[in-house]
Image (cartoon, rainbow, N blue to C red):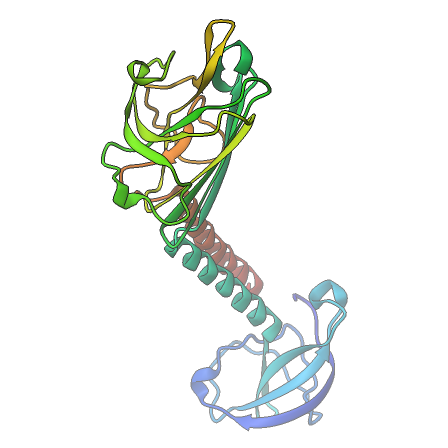
Length: 301
C-alpha cells in the first residue's frame, strides 16, 4: 500500500458513527473525497463527530488484484480523511475462520494414520510369507477409533490373525463395526502360535484358511499405540508358516504417526491419551495468528 493513492471513487453515502470507531489508517498521500474536498495527510487522532463514507475503488492488480474492492473512509467536514482497507479485514476474517476450524478439529480429536510392515521392513515371515504385507489405516471421529487392517501373502492361505491390545482392554471397549468372530485372550507359542517370540494380549480371528488376503476392522474407544501383530497358516513341507512384526515383545517411545516406527503396527492402547496431530494444528493456528500480527504492524509502518 505504501505510496499509493486510490482513485475512481464512486457511490459514496455518509453514515454517522461513533468516534470510538476511528481506528483507521491515514493514507500516505492526499486524496479527493466523494464531495470533491482535498484532504491532507495528518498524524492519526480521534475525530469529533465523524462520518463514515463507504465507497468503491479500483486498485492496481499488484495491490489488491484486478477486481474492485470496498474501502471505508472517515471524513469530518472535508478536513481529514482516514482510510481502512476492508480487503485486509476480509483476509483476517478468513484467517480467523481457518484457526477456529483447526481448533474444532483438535477438539474432536480427528486424525488419520497409515502404515505398513513387510518383509525386510518391519515384518519377519517364514519362506512362504517372506514377502507378506500388513497394511493399516487408523482414523478417529469424536473419540471413536477405527482400525482397518489388511494382511496379504503370495502363497499359503491365512488361517488366523492376532493384534495386540492393552492389558486393560476388555470386551466393553469393542464397539459396533468390529469384525465378528474375535477372541480376546493372552497368546504365545504354547497355544497354537508357532514361532511367536514373545506373548501377546490381543484379539484373535480364525479365518477361512482359503484366501491370500484377509481384512480385519476394530472399532473402539481406545486411541493407538505401537504394538504387535502375528499371523499363521499351516505347514509347508513340514515347517510352520507364520509372520510377525520384527519388534514383537519390545516397546518404543516413538510418537504416534504414519509408517511403522521401525517394526511395530498401530493397535488399541490403554486409555484416551492425547493425539499429537490436533496439537500440531493448534500450534499452526497460533503461528498463523502471530504472522498476521507481524504483517499488520509492517503494513502500518
